[in-house]
Length: 612
Image 1: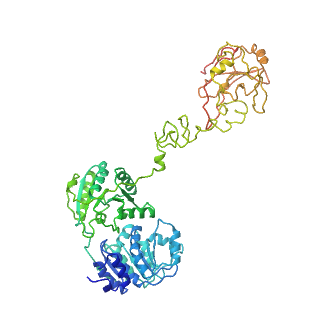
Image 2: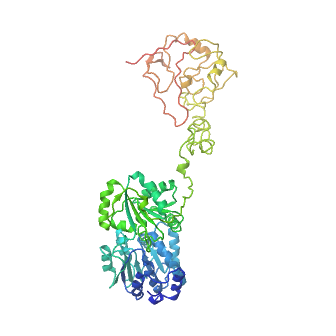
Image 3: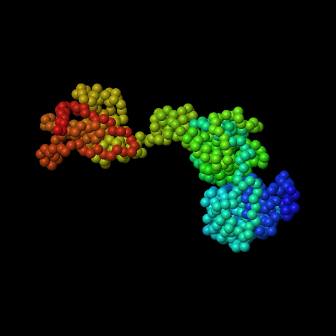
């Protein structure tokens, strides 16, 4: 078939190819390099994996001249980032030898590096249409000096809707440029592109007119959806390097996680990943760091990976063309391969139409691993995965610590600080919420409402700061609702109440009526009015026949009752309209305790009237 020097390629480039093990040109290179070296337009139909990159890259590098900053001399348009990186990896060592520069322009990466590369001057730019148009609008690149334009995978661009951006780019290049087009088909929109932008092109057809799928074995296995993941894992163990195709990004993520949980080393690839993540996945699969690649149709074209033994159609392809391109990832270069379609019973009719479209006649059978050819398989376990934030925070141990990592993961039952020491819900605080159980100052600085009502802001949480037994001992046996016991005396001799302005209260006795619904400890229910012991005893006989005043309780279960209260200015009785509206619940702090309906010593028996 000759050598590259016979086709007009310089000795420097031929030596680089020889060092890579490429000594003889392929068929597509023999047919397309001579007219391209003469400066003619070329439209070539050739399948993927036939050597198209060198077919248009070698004559371009031989003819391209040095570029000025932001004004490249040659342009290669590709539909996907992976194909752009693949072309860049092939041309970069060749361009270095002849002192030419090659760069890439595509989305998913930072603009900064692309700006700097264009400012230094790139002779050849490998670009995706979207990011290239964006840089043109920003003024970072000008295409008026472009002498050679190559459109690779033109049919794929038409399928992805890139025809309009491609036409816009071609309109901004030199009118007398050289246009080279490579595609798997030359009909429909591709034919319109050839007619509009090429001048007397040399039409070449290499290989079969359609993608050949006769070199691999086809299997259509019937199964429920729940069996797809375990059967895919077993296929990967049996066949080795495998590409698993799904239709959606979420499907790729889900299948990737299921295969990892099954002990298979896999990587995911779809359009939602950043370019760095996609590059890492591709490099790991190419270099044998994982057993399988789970991908969308992004990897169906332009992906040239050697040694792929099996292709699994986890989800059905969109049409016959997609089935051919997916299946073409295996049995490349004369090797053998297996294509397995996982079919659910409702999808059987659709796969029947698909078989007629692609020219395959295979029966639907249950999974049969004995019918598969034998491959040499090297098992590659999955990499240890670091637990993400959601996994670390999943579950609570001991009922506390919203940041816990699950029962038993930490000695203290959750967060690094133990959640709550008592095991309750703490919303992430070490001491169980707030240090004082509510607001930092307990609601108010004086421990309650200004008028003494309400208990939501009490520093002691609405209850006395001693328990029931201690209170009974201090009161000499006094209990709620009991007339027994001596007078309640203060152990300190005198207690001070800092209500409002800090008035000093009588130390001999305090009125505890409605204390659990009041503000500060020992306040009266009528808003903090002080009564001496003598004054209360003097007026007790005159008020014995009167009904009790409202206790000031604002809980949810207080009974509705009619109370008669005496006006401050006149001695007339006025009818109460009912209980006061409760204050709004605070965001934090203890709940109000239940009402204290116990009688005060010496007070008349309470009577309640129900509203009719």
